[in-house]
Length: 595
Image (cartoon, rainbow, N blue to C red):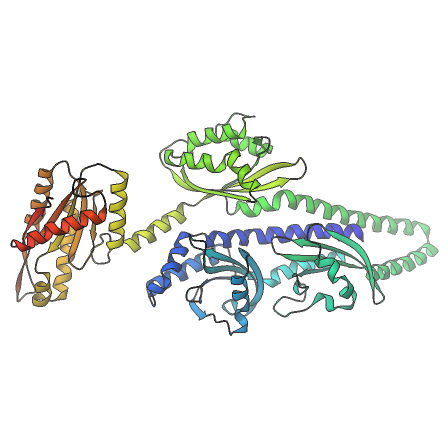
């Protein structure tokens, strides 16, 4: 009984750990998605925007379908809106008892938590939710994301163990409430310690979180052998209860049968006894082998669905921690028995794009890993661009390292996971581009224009640039005389003209109704004057709505960097003064700012 209970506990513990590892990682990955953070930060600025709502619905549906979860949701702390794959489900309020889990989680210090609840979006199935907090750069919680899968999946696993090994399996929380068993879930609160056989064991079980407990107990005429182990990832206790009365009854029946058989003939007794012992032995061996296999392979199999490569490094002894890791490093061009820190430099030089090498080496160096571990951290992460065979076709990769202590030799080790995030980065860039573009012209909007111009000026201090402000003359008359449709055409045509007049790497943006700006490299003052004259000439034309004809022209103000300013605000102010001078002197021309 003791051996069966202990080995059952180890197998179930590994089963639970492997089952929950993936959704926990997925929830944390979603919670760290910059797209989701940007959405939550600006959610109140875009109320009722159907395009953004569809984007969030598609985002949630993508994760739900990709990993075959029964539920994926998002809650904004700013609006308390609850989003799932069908859109906005409801707004969570403190006075609704069904929302207690949400406000309790926000009040807790935990980064992630589990709860079991009824999921209406999953046809009222009971679902295990893994909830994770989303934080902004300031560390404030701006939302909660969760993934969930049905409880009956775990209950089937528990039923298999209970049927095969005559044990009862429970997962309970820190108050003793049954979160999961073969026939109970946390959705209907049931106190394990309200049962007579467990009533006196509450303090003993719940107070121990450091090591596995196993002991015999007797209560209400019943005797049993119990194994209890705390599961840190879930913050629940795993209970394996082996009822001695059941085994005693089975043994009694076997004994009486044996006597009857013995009375009939000795030989069959020996055969039956041998079979029973062999079957019992095989059951123990089966459990032991299963426990060992799961320890070495389950995690790799499950995470292999998420990651390209997984390898282990002995940080303390500065070396690969396994033959598989040694072979993997060798496949990347690292000679065998090369120290880890030297292998890191070889891989960086051969594969990683130049601008990301220093960050890669600084993040995963022995010195940094040991520092993070000493300070209580257990995770390192870095996104960078990499090429497989030193070719220029780089792709995005995310390397995550989990730091842990290896008890067998007292070393500090890292499990490192390589994950291709090309699609994620491409999606982020697509959404960023969409948010930064003006819908009518396709040029950068005001905020994006200012940010990109400021960045270029900071990256190239002292370099000569020309800053243009371009204003369509008498645009109000075009709208009033020819209509807004013609006005929109004038704006769109003007944007196309600017794209032709300037180079692809120049920064062009629409910052107002009929106001545009551009930043270009200017070899000289004369070059800037010629460019301004070219734009003025190209823009001069007439438009008509079929009845009325309106002349179209442009006024331009130009400020040269660095003499007229080295940052956006200064250049804008001085170019605006030059534009004012142009308009005061008849429009349809340009002026270069001169202090």
